Length: 146
Image (cartoon, rainbow, N blue to C red; front, side):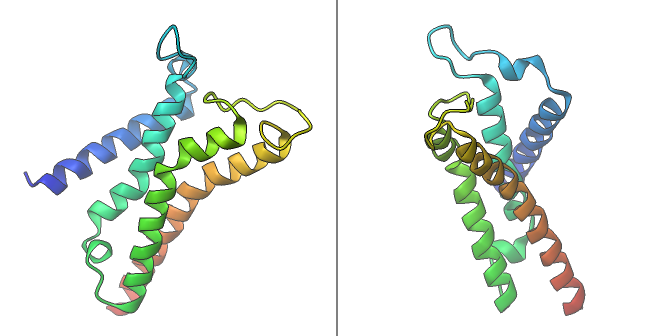
């Protein structure tokens, strides 16, 4: 099996596992990774799932890895930006929440407040939604090309 196919398989397994754990509300998500650090497993699992969705699309679509047409070049560029934003999900969300568990209070400041929470949810939902929209646009473009 080629190296790319192994990465694709691993990425799909991670995405499906993360999605399953998130949708079922598994208690694993709330458990701390260690006794000294208050980092919940849910942060790491969500982060890996967030990265694996656009990465799976990138690894599975040859025309997005090596674009030929102008639309494929734009879609490839957007997909690479989504992968980059997914990698930055934890640092950016940490700056929004002020903690690694991403708990928001009703404080008056921006960090950890309600406005930051709205941006956290926009960012967290934006990456997977944008990836799905990009996937649909890619397939629509392929359909019209034929």
